[in-house]
Image (cartoon, rainbow, N blue to C red; front, side, top):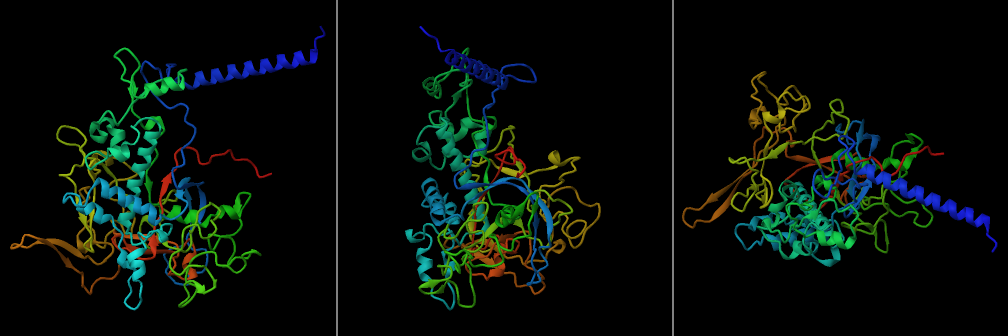
Length: 579
């Protein structure tokens, strides 16, 4: 028999490569699961330190797109024709983060309302204000000299507007939506990964049995009322050569005293996502400008006036030439163009994704609706104090501890509501959440990076951020600043609940601030909103433009989108020279 030597050599070489690859992988896997500090085994099925050593990168949450962070010029780069003097250019750096591909739509917000209505029935007096406080204000569409009842009655709930951005939502409601979204997404992830019973998030949920991310991380066994049939554990060391079938069986097992132990998902598991939130002003402006599309080597080729390339609002492409690139007001009485040949094909808001995305893949970062951001408004951006992840509005809190030294959870009896300046009642917290209190000297003593819980007024005009100050008299607490010592003399509208002594019913006593001494509308409850809307002229489409509105107020032209911080590396791929 004649032996093919060439074929034999090829087979031997392939076997050697395969053996080398197997040995290398085995060695790499062994090294990954061995502590470089102690030499102990990580993820030992018998116990000890458990850690997700196979974690690769953060999962992209529903609706989000990764925005790679970087350096940019924040503020006006074009002429400030309004003479606002409130956005002088400064160089800032933002970390990588995720942002909603589109604005939050009516159908997304309706899902939130449906969940609240099922879990906290408004028919129950204990929860009535939870659902009612989340409802958008549909009366924002009304106008003294305009007929807009169609939008008032249909815009939020009718399927024709399901993919249109939600409006009539104030800043507080937008923030509460983001909190709810965080818990629902993490709840679904735990169900997918086998840490929660299938379908429990729909079937078993009620006012006293809900899932909240932070309470779960602190005390998993108390979620869903401590029901062990819903909140499950997974066996440690499941990566130690077990079959998929065996791993699945371990999900609900109860280990003996001498056998492998079961664990809940923790931070070290790497499965739970950071919170959804409103983007900061710096993040929003960076994402809207998308200067990455103007990049040449390590510099930007000029600054963008709009989220797209060029200095005009109309398309220059041959096929779509002349079409408007965003939904905005072209001129007096021109909200959508001439019938049959529309400029932007929308007279009020438009369905999301009606126009092309910017270079980050984000839709409607100019036009359609303006958007709430996290920041408290101030005319100045203090880049001398900070040029990294700039944000004004930090109020640091900590978990409330009871007399027994245990973390205190919010219950139906301890729930608190806020009555807004316009009389609307909104739940400050909900059952199952961890009660929060301001940080105190225990956290701030001898620190250089922060000294108080509330940092909204930090470096805001003068030494103590007030019009008057008593040097050295501060006791280090966050006591409310008296009206005479406020930095900004904005109106103070007071709302209180009055009980009728005869009927026993309660009514709202609204006291509008009619003082003629007020000099500004700016205060600590005033938030920034960014971007132009369907009601705005082209000037406001500039990503740098900034305006402010009281956080209690809702309009027919302000919506919002959510963001999420990125954990881990700045980018998903390795950087390399262009050529």
